Image (cartoon, rainbow, N blue to C red; front, side, top):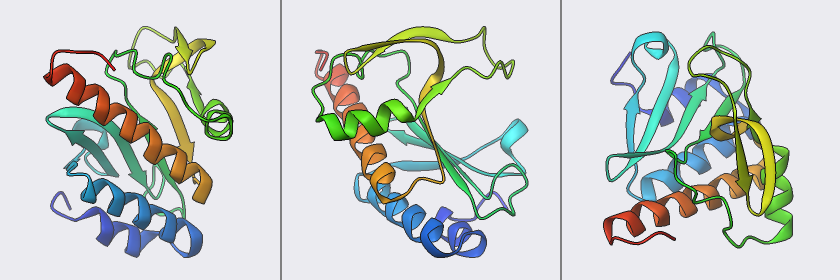
Length: 165
């Protein structure tokens, strides 16, 4: 199971718009040189991928829900403690989608709890360390997630060059 490509899983588990949107997002990630790593430990028996760029986390994807059988998928963003989403200039429409998908702490026990974060100039409390969570994202939400990936890639490249974005 660990060698299965994400596209194979998407085609096997998802249907209709969910399948189309997930394939579009996976294609975008591949075209931007992301590395897909299957989840281990708790995530090992699920269709879960850690997405990396230059060996840093960018986002995470779960296909088929916790049981791997639902026509659902989830994207979580990652800022790896960076402030890349804090004051980044973003159009109002994309901000609205991003704000609607802020991932508030669910007290899952994997960390010490949520934190205060400024996201595109707006303060939020009790935010999960993954910052954004898109459950069954539609086309517009996938486009927003792509923009968040772009911001994170720029953040990583800025760190490599010795500057913050």
